[in-house]
Length: 267
Image (cartoon, rainbow, N blue to C red):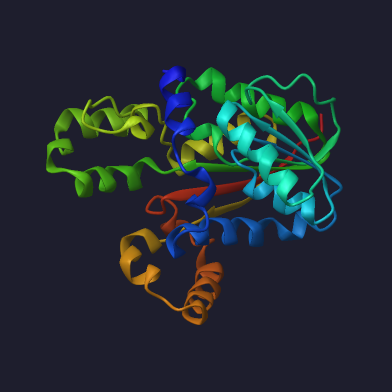
């Protein structure tokens, strides 16, 4: 499964994903906005699953001491190229987010986990990432976790193809967070899709206290065509509205992405 995952991201244009459309821009803009109160006072930040560095480079350019960890060699190569192009200094490592022994204990103010949980299909691996985040965070350090809602994905399957609307496919997704149907592409076959309640339990069980739980996209993906057609001024108006309601609990399950921000509990 990991080989399939690596091949998928080796050929995927991750560089453009967060900037190419309004419905993907809102993910980045919301995450930056919701983390601002914590990053403004931070000095050190690690991103586990940094991809091509959209977040890592942003925060490095804001003056933070950034460590970026990424598993896919092609994405690491592009991250290095992006850092060079921007003349940005940060520490880059090709490694699995489940094991980052090269990062010292209690050395980070903030840890971002904005992608790995999408693809860690084993509970023990998801826990391992958060345990590593806990280990490297300073006391009261901040953790940010992104996840993909399995409730949103169920609707996406119905939109993709009626062939995927079967009791077996939907029950498997609902009960396990997995999609095993051969008709779906690699992202879905290698994916893991969470419920909002599950992510909260995972976060708390790994030694963190919840601070925020945010519907990163809100219901934007359901009006994607319309959002993508907005002018820049209109997009900023929509973003302002979205940021005013993204904490609404009733939006969590229907949002494509969710964002949990938590603080490391005292030992």
